[in-house]
Length: 543
Image 1: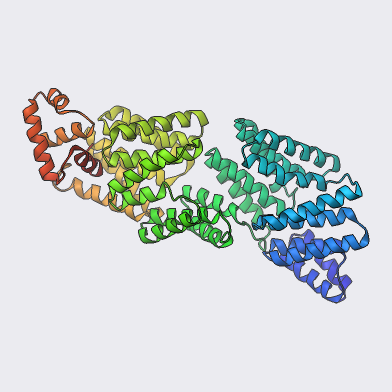
Image 2: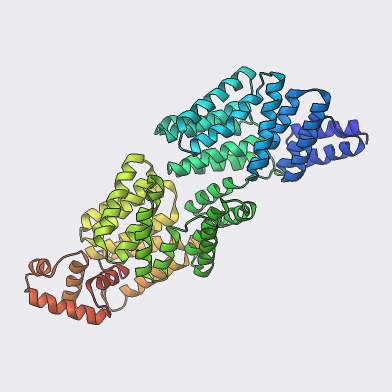
């Protein structure tokens, strides 16, 4: 086979997006005779898309020099530009900066009005948004979009569209930003952009969905992109940060195996980069949910070593291990240190659960109220569900059973609509406790059955133990173990934050009788104070 035949097959394979086949034919042709710079660019693209980044970068460098030797500054700048983007993708920021600078110098010296100038705006625009100046970032993305329009470059137009969407979200124009993100992803799925840019656009979209708590949109675009990738089986689908965002989406949707694989792959791909901390945190989260506490702790430790504070996961791990005081102390510190609204929202739901377990009803109530305020401001269904669940838990702890039932039903409906099975099952557990307070044993059994089914499908072993404990408790000595009915009544009121005088008035008994009941409760439960008794009541779903 001659090099001309090999080149023909290589170009035809590239057009069909048969990346590995195209790579082999280009390599064969290059072995016969050095490729022209345009074909070196094609070889670099094929190599990149099948995961041969080093070879791709070498081909870009060869193409750059070949264009210079030919006296083609446009081609030389383009090769330098794409080489810089590849380096930036794998975290080599300094070399990438050098190649970006070289591309710009070549264009300036040749006084060229080129589409490459639009691509050169992208790193700066992204940096502006990251550094908290979305107004300037939006302006630079808009400038890039205008250059794309003049030169008819659909790839640059789509990248600029996604960037403008990202900036608008940071400027609190979420509907406008989301519309632009969707438009950019439509171009990806339609095949209007190179697969190299497709991954970047998808990553921008998922990052924005994470910031706006838009789980449904993140999952729908993840499914669409997966179908698009299926038509190119040789394509390396996700790289670096994309895997992280995808892992979180898969975890929330209950696809824990996929989430674990993506998170582990991200740990390896990002090993030398700061984002590896977030990858290890995600690994730790999945271990915790599955009940593998030792590996969860190890992953959280590695996340912390790489600059990602392992919260709220570590606090929830302590709670699952029965270390309630440690969990409460930890989450209180996290709330003091976390001021950014979006990050704080992720901590508040965990704080409500932990503080209730610790008997700190006052601070749990404050956390739930703050979460409700953030959910109202952002308007994301995911946050509304988390807020409704937290509010239901507070009302249940306060003995407001009707209000608790209403809030939990709202949370359950949203979780079910979002198809988030773990969160749905957790709400079912709390609804079972509400049914028990009402004396509705059939309802209680149905809620526990629903929770058990979901936890079994997920492989959530710690939660299955909790469900089994609740079933066993229903068939043994009654809801409060060895406590008398009157002691159980006193404990419920005590755990709701009532004073002895309040309890006496509610039960029409003397304060002295209340004090005696409280003392007996402490003795039977093996606790020494009201906080300990409240924690026991919460753990055993008595309140």
